[in-house]
Amino acid sequence: MIYTYAYQRPAVTVDIIVMRSINNLRNILLIKRKNEPYKNQWALPGGFIDIDEEIETAAYRELEEETSINDILLNQFKSFGKVGRDPRGRTISIIYTGELQNNNQKIEAGDDAKELKWFTLEDLPNLAFDHADIINEYLHLK
Image 1: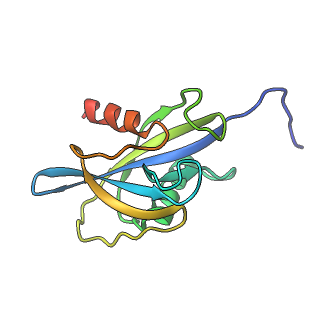
Image 2: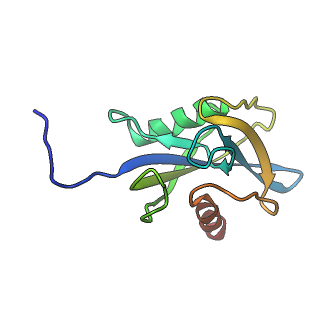
């Protein structure tokens, strides 16, 4: 039986903060978006949760699809759901974090990612959505 409700439902996404350390410098992995909204802008890797998918499974799947990273431990950090954070509609994102242990691990842009790049925390580009706020909150709690 399919249930229907009079209430609109938000979309749910996962976004992943992937960090690494090289020569005592902290780096964060960002993707350049292939599609609108924010086409060609930098963002955290992530995407929409499938209707029949566990949230954590979605985080690992999205990370591997967009970056080819599959050897990392992810931890749920926080959810972000400010109204207007996504021009496509009401979207709530659950943020995961992970530290890359193998700096030689191959990374490759795929799926919705046009390009990948490691950025130092002192030299972040302008970011899509509210991803700058997400990163800043994560860094202030570390």
